[in-house]
Amino acid sequence: MAEFDFDILKEKFSAYADGFIAESEDPGPFLLKKEHTFRVCRNIRRIAAGIDCCSKDLLPAETAALFHDIGRFRQFREYGTFVDAVSENHALLSCRVIDENNLLDGYGAEEKKRIKDAVFYHNMYAPPNGIDDSTLLLTRLLRDADKLDILDVVTRRYLSGDNEQSNYVILYLTDDGKVSPALLEDLFEKRVITGSKVERLNDLKLLQISWIFDLNFDASIQTTITNGYMEKIFSTMPQSDDLIHAKSFIDSYISEKIHRQ
Ligand SMILES: [Fe+2]
Image (tube, rainbow, N blue to C red):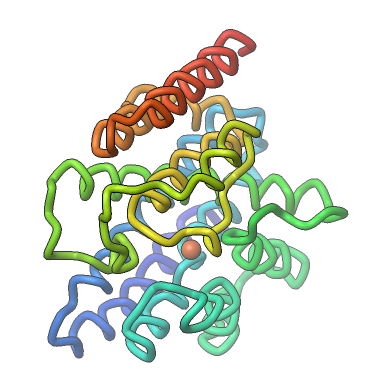
């Protein structure tokens, strides 16, 4: 597939997304995912350009980014939520939408599988063991590019103090001013927090902070520093001893990572 063909894929994606936007009385959630997708495409290109990623990987990587969340549109229309646990796995749904709409026509069977696998793995706790190197590269690029944009969106949401609008961004969680202690334990063990442990808004914030342990590329860590994601999220949480300690723990982790580069 030639480089210019990505524009055709983008048009296909836009036409699909715009169908949902046009028919909805509240297009906000669909617009959010459409805009998120284009930013993830830009992120993945930027991260891939910064590593020794041969040019043959750029187009599949961008394509995986373009379709990674395409299942979100049907998910929100059918269930009114982006929470997979109470609807369905949106990555799997994205793979189904890709197939049903023949979105990867033009790619060979092997490349198609690699892209769909990366989409399927993008929201897993971790990529499965034993996947081949080229699929793992695509998966890691996608996971980083996706996380960086989510961090950007939620940071803006938390700092805006907008507690009424766009609650789908914060998965309808309420802010009771508390943090679940088990999550702090995960953080201090440098473990990514699982979604099933999230009970309140501060838990979600800690989960997003814990993504720092799952960023695969130096450029991604750099982006979190440049944009101050971690400190901005912490600034919207209670200034308890535990959380002050957590913040300095994350700060040290980041400086250690950077000095190793
Ligand atoms: Fe996703």
